[in-house]
Image 1 (cartoon, helix red, strand yellow):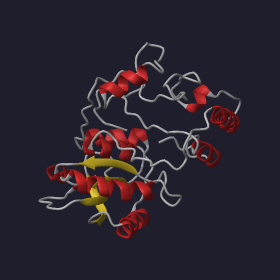
Image 2 (cartoon, rainbow, N blue to C red; image 1 turned 45 degrees about the horizontal axis):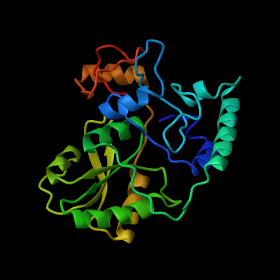
Image 3 (tube, rainbow, N blue to C red; image 1 turned 60 degrees about the vertical axis):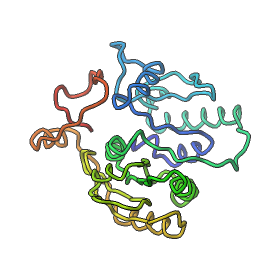
Length: 258
């Protein structure tokens, strides 16, 4: 995840008036096609990172680019951040919304496999919401969503939904017979994960305790891309994207996901 623009306190504050989307590129054909309509690089192909601000109909309000810095030009990074915040505040006034009390759903990633990978890339723990029964799952999701959007936890986690307990083997949970939430630390390459905390059922107090416990024990470790790729190649780490990688800046034939 961007550690300058998107983590800046003023940008975070301004973003509260927006729907922020963490889209996939080569990991989702449909999302990749959408992103390619927002920005393509000089070669005319989809690149790994895309940024733009859209109106409620999905049309661009700003031009598209690889990053906020490309869209909000300026002599320094701080000047670019300030320009971004100014523009966001201007846009928010034009689209004030209709119901601030409306229920907010969980911002799920495509599935557990891609959730682990995206969370690893963004250096975030992953909350896995799991149940095979749709009624129980809905109750669980409502409890988790209330906490996920609270001031204490907003923006702290990535989320994935599981409706087949067999999928939980990806996070080391074998033979599960009941659902709940599993807060997971993804490994450095986003291929598997370790459960940090678990809450069984839609009990807000238990879920909140699990989120707090995981927050305390999770250690986000920044990655040096060159060392990360070399180690991944040396240890045989391999990630298969859903669509071909067309970013000219991507290290060729490594198969390693940053």
